[in-house]
Amino acid sequence: MNRRTRIKVCGLTREADIDAAVAAGVDALGFVLYEKSPRHVSIHRAAELASRLPPFVTPVLLFVNETSHRIHEACTAIPGATLQLHGDETPAQCLAASQGGKFPYVRVAHIPPGQAAQQFDLVKYALDYSGALAILLDAQVDGYGGSGQTFNWSLLPPNVNAHLVLSGGLSAANVGDGILRLRPRCLSLAVDVSSGVECTGPGNKGLKDPEKIHQFVAAVRAADQA
Image 1: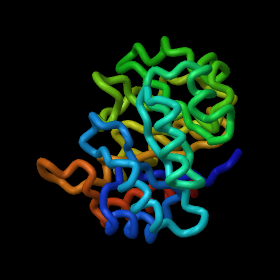
Image 2: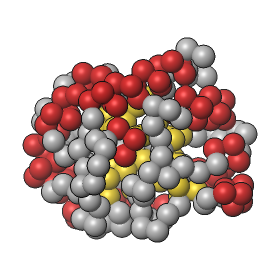
Image 3: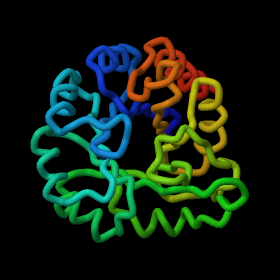
Image 4: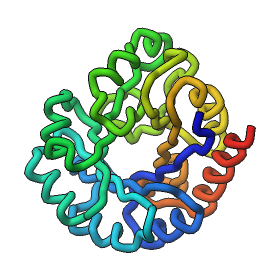
């Protein structure tokens, strides 16, 4: 069992936040290419930001029900990126979006709130999307994520034959608990944070707080030692 939890910070929009996340030691940075998101950036802007990344820090491009043509355009502009397919994409549509497996992708599973999480068949979902690098677990909300809401981690299956990424409402205060609950249930675990490391106050979606990023990374590493 891999005890090193990989870390992704999502929804980056500024150079300073890229630099802060890299300095904190994250593994991947996410750029939202979904136009309805308050953290949306254009392909051109995502390419500018991704150009600051050093070797072995992965850019991740988030799409929602996007056309294969635009996904290919983004992957051409940002070489080495991983796709995050966050909408209603079927396994066949994921394969098409990845150009037949040319571009690696993560598939999002929208987990219902409350006790309904127990009814979500994550084992079958992971099998259906076996072509994905990992299954990202996010809370089911109106729209497509980014709400900062958690779901009941304890109700997920005890054994999932897949790499999982925990997302949805994570912060330095709760990420350790999430890691300890989910790490024994999967092949490996990563975490994905956005709102939990943002500046406080209205209008700050997409603006990250360097101190919160460092606190989040520290909390993950503490859980890895537990």
